[in-house]
Image (cartoon, rainbow, N blue to C red; front, side):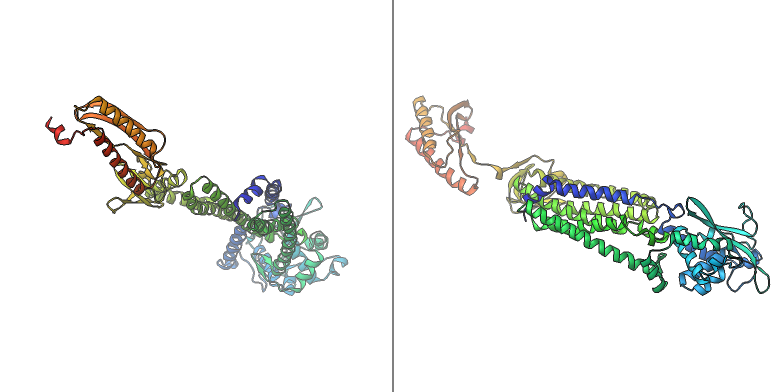
Amino acid sequence: MMPAQYSTLLYRSPVAWGILFFILLFSLDVSSAQSPNKSGADLSIKTMLDSKKEAKQSLNQYDYSQAFNVPEDEFERGQPRSAIAGYLRAMRAGDLALATNYLDYRNLSEKTLNVGKEELARQLGVVLNRTLWVDLNSISARQEGRKNDDLPSYRELVGKVEYQGNDVDILLQHIPRAEDKVKIWKISNATVEKIPRLFKRYSYSPLGEFLAKRLPAIDLFGVMLWQWLYFTLMMLIYYCIAKAFTWLTAFITKRVYKNVSEDVLSFIKEPIALLIAVILARSFRDEANVTIAFRAVTEGSTLLIIAWCWVCFRFIDLMKIILAEKFIAQEKPLAVYLLRPAGTVIKIIIFSIAALNWLENLGFNPSTLLAGLGIGGLAIALAAQKTVENIIGAITLYTSAPIKIGNFCRFGNSFGVVEEIGLRSTRIRTLERTVIYVANAKFIDMNLENFSEREKILFRPKIFLAPDTPKENIDALLVAVKAMFSSTEMVAESPIRAHFKAYSIYGLELDILAYVNTTDFDVFLDEINQLNLNILALLNAHDCKIQVMAERVAE
């Protein structure tokens, strides 16, 4: 692990930041691109599912034959809605023979008839898949069709398809059934006549045509099996291209930054590679094989969101390593413990934003969910107010580090050794060997005195001499005390004080001060024991008597 190398690459490398900026810009541009076909531009997965569900309920749960005098028909062509629904079902099942029963082949040109009835039905299915999402609920369920649509009474509009700058109507027509002349609905022969031209404009690519004709007619979310296989294969190809590019980038980075860590190179070769592959696939996909349903699925940006989440998560991990090294260099090792929960919180926020964005892309409205989360979040915030305060207190203790684990300190009126700084409370072992738990929010507001941070320990004995002590003896004693301090190896050179401080009711007060060069309290006690004995010897040598407490009280 080499955090300094991460810093060099991530902060100072224009290559790394340039790649990320380019990818971000490119992905935003791609994700915001709109489909050129207005009919399916706003289609989403939710819209597709809702439309199918409503249409199915409408067709299955209501007896239109009695309500609107719809004639019975083997292929349910008595009304416009069931007629186009039958055709679409036949196409989804891949039953072209069944689909031909829904097209009107009367009065067609010989060129169009030579295409073949089943092929015409298939070609129309391709055109509709690529240009028009048929909303069955918008098509009349009446036997006579819609009357106020500015069309002849025998025609019903299914939708419009853009062709060479103009809109081509896809029409149903009310025609007599061949067997008994009962009026039924079929796709108009005027529309059938235009199918070859429309198919030439909207046909699949040669590979797409090959796969569509040979693979089973199975679909998921409206996307055919062959499309899933085709675009999965293209995704793999783009991933290989992206992998080669990122390997080359990693190789160049390794040559430029000799000591770069393998984790940074892995970040470039793995999540960045996937992100580039997804962007390439979205940008350079073969539009000839894209249907409206496929476009709706890809508008969910599922792979793009996953790729960006992976990039962000790995980048957060790298930043955690950089910050850990920074805190250790600043002698704040406890702050390192906060990086993991902090990183987890950031990842949760990123994941939540990504999930909401994904749901919105699929067509679901996240505002209801957000409103519920807002009310629930407010209740949780009120209930967890103290907990949040304690966590913030823990962050303050970790980052500012006024105390550390193992420090001996005074907090309030108590003394003890810090044993643990948790997210909720700090555990302290007192001099009586009991344990006190203090909430972090309260602990940081206390007056903290950290004895373990001392670089040396004060020695300041209280000495009161008898009032009748001669001046000459006091002068000689003070000089001798200074000399004794100066000659003692464990006593700091400065400051050293030995003065006659004041007259008091307790006697003649001496001001004696020195520092012992140690932070170990046991060593300090051994040293001042010897200093006190030396001072006692000097008092006796210079005939200076200490004013005892009994005499002071008597006075």
